[in-house]
Image 1 (cartoon, one colour):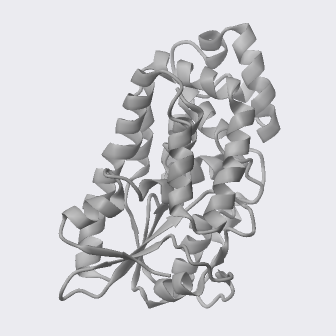
Image 2 (cartoon, one colour):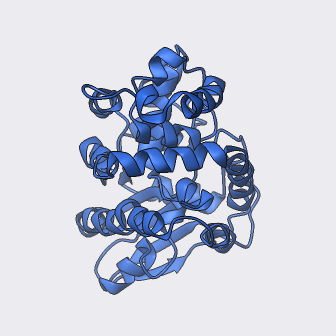
Length: 315
């Protein structure tokens, strides 16, 4: 399994939900990031310097008010939350907001219930002593003790290890969600917690363990990649983000890569586009999803064009 496939193919909505659950588990303030917004708050969206690149795309068809698709990234880097004026304007002009998964109490409860092993061997037994200790040393950086680690499913652990450590849970998707609540917008999820969990549960246990071991081996490289992705993201450079993805696809288990690509990217892109269509047809909607779901022949932007919409970049 390649390093980039592990980083780029995990759903943003799921990563956010898992990060919030881990920070909650360890007693931080992530819950306030989700539930602490009230109507009438200001200053949730910050303005950045304009660049000649964009992650914002207008989706149009005759007779409809335009909707927007905006690529996001999970990072608490303050630069990520500084948005171009065009993004803030599109957000404010939209009547509705859609994201991969709404991180509300119901979704987090469903995910929490699915994180832990309920029967069969625990993670320590699956990995064996050496691999478990290597994994525990990395997960300790996230504040997860061995006793809890042993009860987590392999997909939960490898997902967590591909993410930057969450401090406050103030990711861009959560900030936009809070701003949508504050503005009283209609809010829609493109996937449910059960659907996102099901994506990972459909991977065999042996494959989950193989992926986890790969992530452990390449954890340092994943950290560097996270920073490269953030740097490209803050430049608004979708092409650079796509290029980073392709650079890390050359090495690894091709069977695992193809399976992972199909289940966690291509299939989910199709599902999310189908869920977008009623929103685009019924309301002008600001849609925030992982930037890595946008490009490519199987990407969301191309799929929308195939369905008869005009998709154009907004500077």
